[in-house]
Image (cartoon, one colour):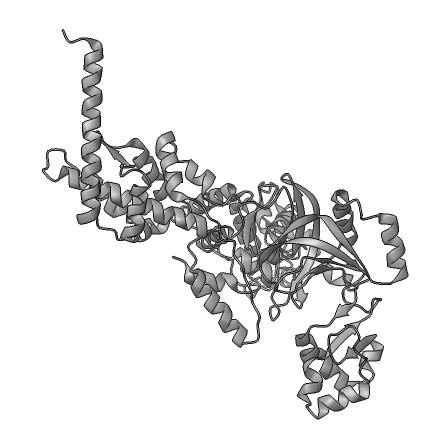
Length: 579
């Protein structure tokens, strides 16, 4: 009988010989027979030179179990699921696997075909997870087209770098496909919950989609009729309404206006004909239904008044497929963001008109903000806040001088004095103020030399649009955060009014948060400086990461799926540039 140690030695030798043979065959295959259709052949070869010419997905027993797990991961990816065959040739791969036959003389080549195709799929898939599948270059060209229309739209992305080849080795060694999500994909808060919402919406589609509401002007509490019933059914589908009504309603006791639709029989007609009618509670707009409408409106960034007007109707009539497409697009946008936001950071989501300071996943500050108008879109980028200016002087941008100040000056020669604006003929500190009459003469005569270096500054005070303080993170876009004297605008649900900068509803609260990490911010001294009305800068010892983003769909800190209006039409542009 052969001894045990000798048998082990024979098995190890056979394994080594197989390994050597398959490695040698793989090298020959890559040099002669490899068909690389998803990635460039040189890129493909790098995967194997990085792995000592060893296979990843196959071994002497055939296809590894990790390979099947990976295929399943790609097939069921919530974002790419509808296009996995087009993007990753999953159907072709599965056909190759189904036809694999050990008795076939081409078995080894067929096995290598599967190995190589799997590596190509891995490379393309992980690059999409890393960078997103929106065509970045094509999008930049679209932004250039907007500039030709005098809209200076700007969007920066974070170039995330990962060693996908090394990560693949780790996946195979640890036999763990979840490493892809952990180390490559975006880690934006609640991204997994956002993906899960796609599955919930797919169930809505299978059940016949959201109920489409017929046209009407408005619906509000006290209204009744068939359209109220439709509204109730629609809000029940989206879980905004969670309880069914119980009691019938007597029309004789209703005192509010009836539903204002063309088809509706109103109460005046009922009274004329002396008809007393009892209706189903499903047709009556009660307090519970109003609260459900408010819930829906908050979820979509609408005025939460419980009245179903045109804007609310528009969002109610969006199909589940439209919502899924919107979610998928926003997940791709998340992949343009930094993977590390910082332990404590400031986050502004433009379509949400909102600013948050988040520390260790906890919201420390939450405030409404005003963002750039459609003609002056706030740029999307990341930076670090480095200093604060109290009682800021406003150096008026040249675009505002040309488009707004000069026309007003021509209407009212005393405009600059009224607004406490001083004109200078250049940007040097020692430059002399320009006489208003001379400035007007230069404008009338269209003197380009006099207007080219023109600098207009507005002194600190009640008329200064920057308010009492601004928060600076010097950047190529020349935008910053600032206070505003026009606080009434924050009552509006749609707040795109600025020339690109972000106006704050609670600047003092932001200052308080910053003082926690910056001991040089003395609140008593700040109060004195603000009263003095003289400009003063305060540097931040602890710079704060700031991220200005553009998401029209996300899951919030309470686990609620959120949607917003595409105020800059970026959804419309980017959905045409996917894949």
